Length: 184
Image 1 (tube, rainbow, N blue to C red):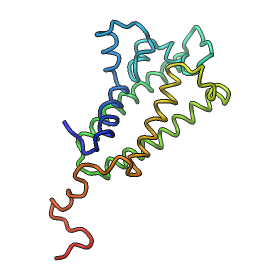
Image 2 (image 1 turned 30 degrees about the horizontal axis):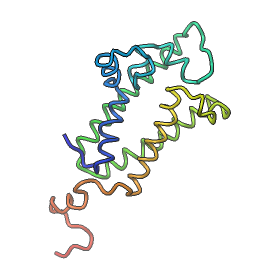
Image 3 (image 1 turned 60 degrees about the vertical axis):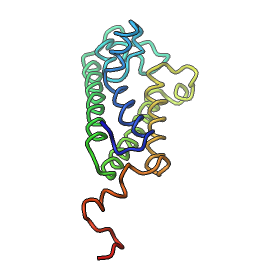
Image 4 (image 1 turned 135 degrees about the vertical axis):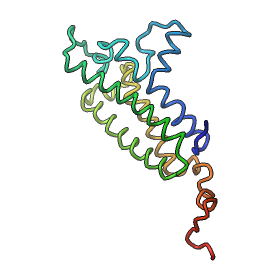
């Protein structure tokens, strides 16, 4: 399968990001590396593997409650469901569209969501914990560091830093649609 993304955005947005959002990271770590480190699990899988860790490790340096309230569990599992949904949507959009505009709109939406994701993490952590990067845990690196990295790459693609989508200039002409300025 291929996408119309240039090479780096293809690797990042159509391969790495969907995998990290879904469960393949967990399958790899547990099956091939025999890891039992709960923090080696990506996105969707962690709440199902260790619900308490997923909830309590959202804010580094805070000891979580012994009992997980059903509301907290519901929210954690719903977030896991959203991670799975984003993974499936990413694969579906990146691999099925032939329209550069669809990819751009998809990346615009994700970049806006990235800002919200980082901001919510900031609000919940508080300023002091947020800027204390040396004491971030793996979940904080995912919520802030990885999300920021993805957002920067989304913006770089949207500004043309990685080039145009493959065939973007020729797709309209191949369909027989005349562009502005074409002669009859």
